[in-house]
Amino acid sequence: MSAAAHRLWRALCALVVRVFYRRFEVDGREHLPAEGPVLLCANHVNALVDAVVVQAACDRPVHPLARSGLFRSPVLRPFLALQGAVPVARRHPGRDAASVRTANAAAFEKVHARLAAGGVLLIFPEGQSHSDPHLRPIKTGAARLVLGAHQRGIDPPIVPVGLTFPRKGTFRGSVLVRFGPPIESARFAPIAPAPASAAGDDGPAVPAPADASAARQVKRLTRAIQRGLAGVTLELDDWLDLQLARQVRAFLDELEDRRHPAPLAQRFDELRRIVEAYHGLRLTQPDKAAILREKLRRFSELRATHRVRDDHLSLRRRRWTLQLVARTLLHLTVGLPLTLWGWLNAAVPFAITRALSRRSARGRDQYDTAGILIGAPVFAGAWFVQTAAVAWLAWGRTDAPVRIALLYVLSVLIAAAVALGLGPARVRLRQDLAVTLRFLRRRRLRSYLLEKRRELMVEVAALVRRVRATTGEPTPTAPSALDRPA
Image (cartoon, rainbow, N blue to C red; front, side):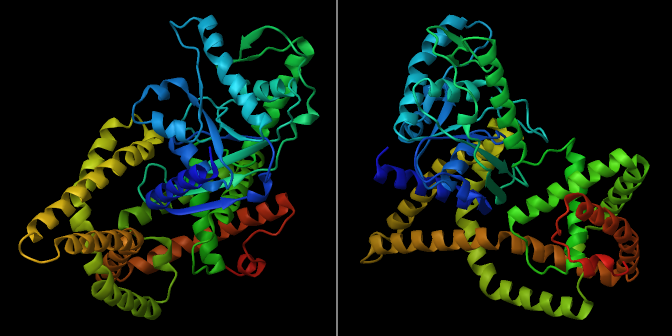
């Protein structure tokens, strides 16, 4: 990929990510070598979007290894060719193993040639995209690929890449890309050259271990990759653990009196520490852990029943009222007109995209991919038709129909950007107005919820103290906030 083509492709990836996700943050870029061969190993939780997000986060050209079946798609083939993707065949029932090895021979020659030229390759060693709360067992293909490169005198470091989507499957959600410390593959003895090839447990044919010792090195490196990925992802027993951790974080925000959203990397670290502390509590004091979990669950259901967020209980009433009035006036005078114009012009393509995405996506891990692949041509086509209609209506009625059409396009793009940017604020404003009216009608509701939350504060503060005791490092929560009476 030429430098110009790379800049164009990376700009396209960044544009797609910025449009589809409200928050996009990258952490640990210093772990990615500025030059030389590199193998990126990422967790696989969001189908084709994962590769797009990683490439938007990297300054260097990235060549992903992709399932060979994707290259048969007339829609995807040009994009895969643009990024220099390498097709990899997989074993499946009805396909002869020998044919898989033959098909992959040229592919892995290309992989090693890219590494020899100092390229960056991307592989998803879990094998398939999923929506599990934890990593799936890592396949041996990545380790075999790297140790096979040693046969050719290539020593690429392995950089774990953690992809975290807090609200996966939600338009205008968030995504955190975290690069972990490189795994120096030189620490693992290279495989002795062998004329034969063998298929790893994930299907691709790669150089086979020459003996039992070499096979042990493959397993050692595979375990190292698994540990590296575990260090940059949230490892949960189930999704209820994440719900509990988020509830605890909400209490931490109140204890810290945080006014602005924390960076995604900080939120990730806090959630990870909370989950680890809770797991420790569950091992040492299972009864106490179960009681805390049940209390948090009940309080969460109580808030959901009344549609009240934690921050609705945090601000003083007078300051809350003044802020609400100011935000409402600003939205009505500035935000609402632009938002209405943006939604008026985007309503039809948005409805088509949502309907087709939900129908074509086979699970949560495919919704974002479907939305991007379907939304891009649908919006482009709809706005082209609308612009042509405006030019046709202006033809003969004005001396500058083209200028009118261009002004229309410009207004639509600006209004769409404003609508996307103000979308979360508009939703929160609507919720805030509804909760304010609810508190006015039921004057004891707020005090009742505050009382229940104070009871939980003591339990939460104890859990956070456990975080500080087990990690040996100061947590983002200030000691003064923890030590004061709840």
